[in-house]
Amino acid sequence: MQITLFGESAGAASVTAHFFAPGSFRYFRRAVLMSGTIANSWAIKEKDMALQMSMFLAKKLNCTLGQGKNLDVNLTAQCIRQAPAAEIQKAADAVAVEQILPMTFPFVPVEEDEHFFKGNLFTKLKMRDFIKDISVLIGSVKDEGTYWLPYYFLSPKMGFQFNHTISADDPSNRALINREQYKSSIQSFIPYFDDSQLVKHALLHAYEEMSESKNPQEKLRDGVARFIGDFFFTCSLIEFADILADNIHGSVYMYYFTKRSSANPWPKWMGVMHGYEIEYVFGQPFRHSHLYPQSQIDSERRFSEKIMKYWTTFAAEGVPRPQWPKYNKVTRKAFVLNDKITGTTHQIDVDVHGKSCSLLSEVQAVINNSKCSSKFETFHCMSSTSSLKCKSFIRLRC
Figure 1 (cartoon, rainbow, N blue to C red):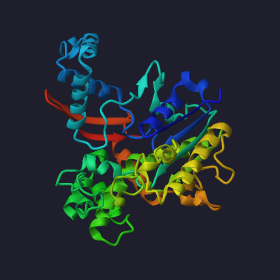
Figure 2: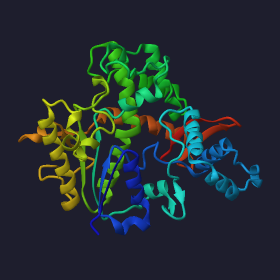
Figure 3: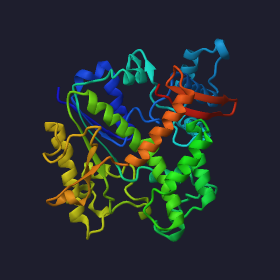
Figure 4: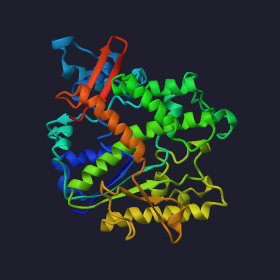
């Protein structure tokens, strides 16, 4: 069977879920993973937490039939199924809003089951119990974190408001945050690290220095964006690629996407945003040329054509192009997808985001050593009739 699965973000997480599902192994031999894996913190939930989220949804729909040990799960599920779709969506949106941690999603795959994973996903990952007869093309975009800022940090306390009624590049849309807003933004993620003040100070210092800008406010803004991209996407993706490279029988190829689309409607400072490589994979410059400046449409089409060729060549042959080096966790070479690929040259980057990923790895190790237990996820939550607020979330790798 020569099927290639590919997906982006949650789609890539869904693809990699099949890596751990024995019933899926015989159906595919290659995978393209764009900015996501099932091991990302946002992509999967512990079983008990998933049940709590479902019961929170049921409560909003007046479907909690019984209490505690007397709760009838089957009747509750039947009640939810009978609710109008619009009401279910409204209630599900409320569940998402009322979680206090940014970058968490209430309804995602559950880490353990008897039918799909046939076991615990993180136990399987730890034991390297996943599909081996596979080759993988995997990568991230340069600015994974900026996409999320106007959604999670639009309050004045954070300072990432976006006014879509004026020009995207208007000065008021530059998100020039001050130090207090920077601290508030980073503080919102500290529950992921067991509320460690040591970690907080380390992150505040490190990410203030990540930006190449000389403008102090831009440095703070870019630091928040970079942290989100590193912690929730790039670093865990690289860690997953390391594991694959050491264990699968096929090859791993890494890319690093650094071209900003000229059709991107968001402010230029947001850079090469999460999800904006998809348009090139599906040939948007050919199908919707009116979205691009006419002065750039030819170069955009050449770039899109190259990307489509890499993806399809990998699907057909298992290698995206001859000059693309195989990935391993020692050299960590990534093929850079920028305008150079439309010419006669190309660029290879080594250890993408390595410095910040090393920091996050060290931070995670400190937290794990102090909190390690038999579980891979720890949740400290308070539930009430109106909300379920998760105070702490740490993925432990013991």
